[in-house]
Length: 531
Ligand code: GLC
Image (cartoon, rainbow, N blue to C red; front, side, top):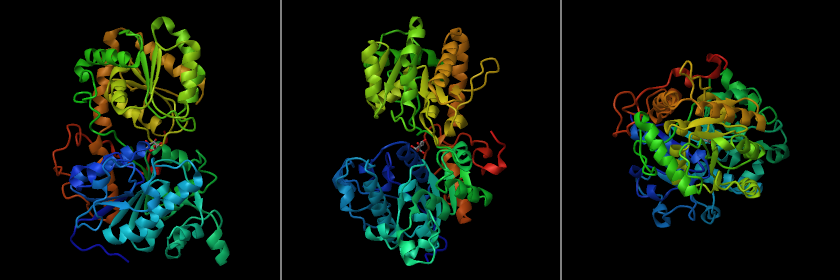
């Protein structure tokens, strides 16, 4: 069993299958590491950066995606180098992968086993962490191995995807599951027989929840939904295990936060930077640039709806937009309504067909995802569309209001937690949300946004100014880091960063550390009133 050296700072190992970027201070490899499929990469990048700034000793483990990483040479810096804090899980399988996740489920499982084999049998013994922070199903067997070695672990659920494996699959991938099989979650009780034990299904995600010392989802609302058995959680043991953890006070919801670079006052991707005070002129300049780049009608009065997230029908709801797109545009034609889609995904083709069929090119743009254009989208558009069927957290609905772009969302998971109905009369709320995940629900919310858009400019601008200012405080990266630091400290029984409460280790970006969210954002669900 590993015991932490007395007196030294606690060592945190963050394990993730993807990350957007790493702070330069983490060494020569940092600049080369970038492997992103979705929001998990952004969330882990913000976390590691925040922990670094607060002076925590943080290590990162990620597969060695040689082909994906930008600078192959730098990434390959030898792992034994003293002081190395970026640890690459090396297997030839990863070297030639050209994206993070494999479509073929057998390959995805195999990749997850190879990654975890390297973490469990090579990286953990080398790093000797005091706490291992695992993220999502590809890391979900690690808490069991950590438990067997007496190392504390936190398991963060970013999504409900999972796979089943067997102990014999694990052994075939080079793991030694006999060291930790007791801490895994089985579809059926493994029983006494050797055969049943080695060939019975181990539920990956559920194992992470079962074995971790603490489990968190990326929003309080999503935790409640899993505890209520939504999103398939009832059938695969997730609901039961989440409830057990909640009863033991070992489950919570911790909201993600946008990266501090999402700031309309300094964002280099914008045609003009702006703040709450001069948003009307700033947004007008960005709208002009957005319309020009996307080939939309150059209409300064047009209400523009921006779609930033993956066009993935299992989660993000692009089929809802496809269902109502033509009708909505026709009904609001004389008001000039425009839709700017800057996103990849399987539904792109279908949306393009609708645009082609009805000749909507000057009103609807369908463009592949591009980071710079997406930022311009938040700055130039009036509203942001996110009708996700489910959403563990979601980032665009927190980024958009920072840029004075009001979110239109389905009330689910993290979207429900962060978007409140706008009420001009009482000057409260920050967007528009609908309850039923269907075309009518989305259409209703778009119509609400259009009613707001037709208010006198003075009235509208006062609300946008308020929402921009409130969002800077509410969606603050400093608060997000502190919530995780609190969680680590409660798991270890001591502080993780020397300067947690007083001054940050390095100058933080302008928005960090301004204000902490009320504690309830972070408390286990039982102690919160029902929504
Ligand atoms: C996943 C979820 C998304 C969340 C992200 C980061 O991509 O689908 O809701 O924001 O992880 O936690």
